[in-house]
View 1 (cartoon, rainbow, N blue to C red):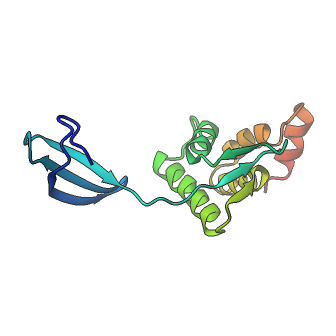
View 2 (cartoon, rainbow, N blue to C red):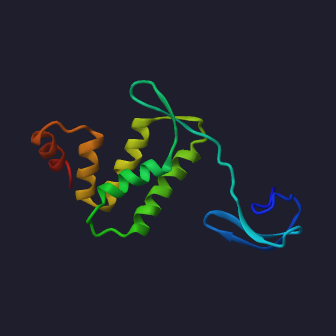
View 3 (cartoon, helix red, strand yellow):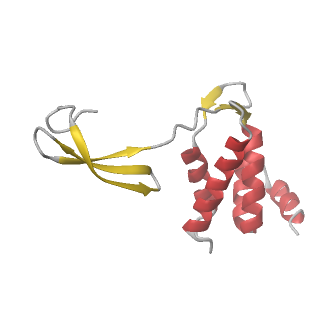
Length: 146
């Protein structure tokens, strides 16, 4: 690892802590004496998402987070609950231990979790996920909510 200031490769660790991003290490360059921070993170392996049309795309939890957050906009659900839900979805996908997953399987996981938290957010997400075409689709889905 190179110092970001002088590119020297010899340094020492002055502090180490666990953080949500991984293991945080404060380092000091032995040449220029400047300090910098590095993060060590577990490589969880790549998962590929198989889209409806057969296209393959790298699994991106941030994309799920954006869609879910949009569904909960202006709803009385905390960001912490949303983040926890998104993390649970990722854990469920990774626990399967597979290198590929179909996009509709991810959608099913998401929609079940959203429905448990908030019916309005569920309808918002379902309208996009299930590609509602008119008011009848909304009425049918709303009728299925207990």
